[in-house]
Image (tube, rainbow, N blue to C red):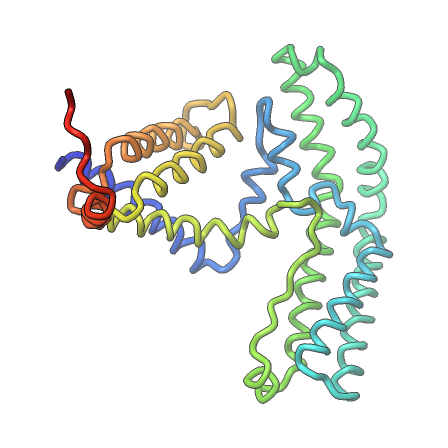
Length: 290
């Protein structure tokens, strides 16, 4: 019982502190981890990265629509007057000029990036390259080179987008903010679930799981959720390699979570003890073994 309590507290503290660290940083993102996924599930994980191939950021018409829509949302939320809307229009025009400059600055790389899409798609469909380790490694090298061609422009555009959002929010007066509360801009979804959603959820998930394990509350549910999360991390880098970046650590902790889920560890020095008493009180004693 003592060993199970210590294991539960250790795993719970790990999840809790990881969640607090992600939440406190304010800019934590799973993007680098998903973008560098490998193995048979790599394509799925890369697809979780927001606008992974730049279909939103590199589409000027789409960006123009999204920025106008954001302007309208902020203006409607804070009830901008005429002067404030003119300020917002100036911010919009400035952001669009910066966007055009970024596209022009990276024109050569973007041309290579677009040309490389078809080549990359052909390699992904080639079963030979996927089955032979040396050719698979070559494919990953080519993929990284291809991604690097578009990364400069897309990173630049993302910074412009964030600055534009900040400029719109800065127009609101303290009185408007106090009256209408803060407005939190969101990015347009590039998939049903992507890092724009995941990045916001994971810190709270880690904190919730950590607290449940620390207090021994709903331990089986929390431990199974933690095990599933850690298993997904392990699969994103499959097969794992040795070294500091190895996902064997996540696999080991996932197995520990399964032990916690299967042994009722929350009943020992945890709140699940009282939940168990309540269940027994209303559902009756467990039948005696024959």
